[in-house]
Length: 300
Image (cartoon, rainbow, N blue to C red; front, side, top):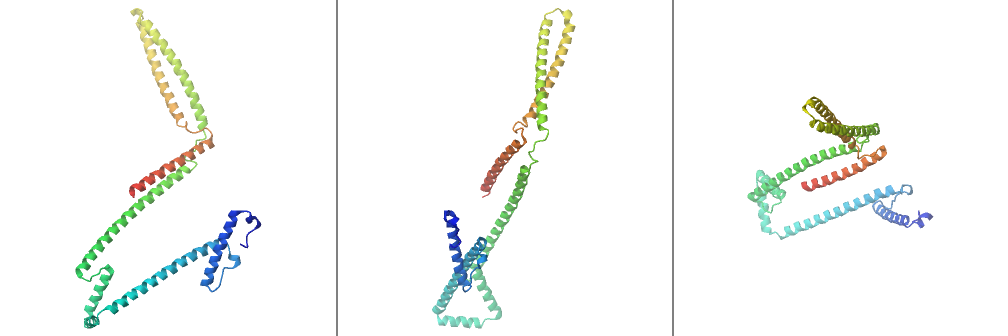
C-alpha cells in the first residue's frame, strides 16, 4: 500500500488493483521466507512480471508438496497394512512357506517370482495360471482396441489438420486485396456497356418499327393481284433479314446486360467495394465455422 499515488486514491479500480498486488506480494514474501530462511525479492525486482512468475511457481510448489504428502501417507498406510498382515499370519504357516522357499531350485525360485510378478502386473487376486491367462487375454484385447482407437483418432486429426490448412489458405486468399479488387477500367467498361445497351435498345425499337411496317406492307401486298408477287417476295426476304439482324442485336443486348449484372452488387467507389467484400468475408467465415461445428458434432 506504500506505492499508492494521490491519483490512485481517487480511482477505486486502481486502488483495488494495488491492494490485490500488495496481498499477493505478502503471500509471496511469506512463502519465500519459509522456503529460503527469510530471503525475499529485492526491491528493484518487484514488478508485475516477477509477481506473476513467483505466483505460478508458488502454486506449482504447493501442488507438488500436496502430491508428496499424499504419496507419503499412502506409503505409510501400505506399510501398516503389510505389517498387520505379517502379524496376523500363522507362525507355522510362515515356517512352512520359508522352508518351501528355501528348498526351491533356482529355476523354481525364478518361476515363482515370475508368477508373482505376472499376477501383480495383471492386477489379479489369484496366481492361478488359468486366471492369469484370462486376465492376459483381456488386457491384450483392450490394448489392441485402444491402439485401433488411437490410430483412428490420429487419422481424424491428420484429416482435420489438412482441412484446417486448406481453410486457412482459402481465408488468406479471400482476405487478400487482389482477390476481390475491381479492375481499374471497371467504371469505364460499365459506362461503355451501359451506353452500348441504350444504343442497342434504340436500334431494337427502330427495327421493331420497321418490322411492323413491313408486316403492314405484306398484309397490303397480300390483297393486291398476283402481278405484284415478285415485289412481295422481295419484301418478305428483306423482312426476314431484318428480323435475323434484330435477333442478333437482342442477343448482344442480353449478353451485355449479363456482363453488367456481374458487377451490380459492388459500389462504383473502390473503398466502398472493399468494405462490401470485407463484410462478405465475415459472413463466409461464420458460415464455415458453422460448417466445422456441424462436422465436429457429426464426428463426435
